[in-house]
Length: 206
Image: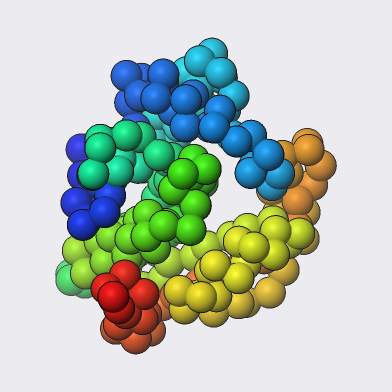
C-alpha cells in the first residue's frame, strides 16, 4: 500500500518521501498566510520533520502520505494523505475477513501552494483518492474533517458532495496548540456514484 501512485490529468499523487523535502519547503514558502488553520512546514528542517512524522505514521499503519505533483511541469504543489484507516473485525468465512484494504478511512492533511489554489488540483486529488477508496479498496465510508473555524474548507468539502455530520468538540490539536473543534463530513459508498458524477462535471465541464 505504501507504493501507491495515482495518476490524473492535471496532477499525480505519489508516495511522500524524504527526497521531497526541498520541494515541499518551496511549496509551503510561496504564501505562508494561506495556512491559518493548518500546520504546514516552513523551511527545509520543518519539511524534513513533517515527512519523517508522516512516514512514522505510515509505518505504524495509520496513514498513507502523498505528494501532489503538477503534471504540466513536474512541480510539487502540496501534500495530502489517506489516514485514520480502520479494518473491521470480520469473522472467519466472511468475504472481507483478512483483507488488507481498509473498510473505512479519512482523507485529510491536504494543502496546496499558492499557484495551485483555485485550479483543478484539489478537485482531482479528491477524485483520485475517493475513486481508489471506493472502487479499489471497496471502502464503506470516507470522512473529511476541518477546523470548525475554516469556512473556506467547509465550503469546498460541501461543494464536492461531502455530507456534514456535525461538530466534534476538542477533536484534535489546532495549529495554535489549542483543542480544535472539527467539522465532520463523510461520503459513504452508496453516495459515491453521485459524488463521482459531480466531480467529473467539475473537472471536465469545459
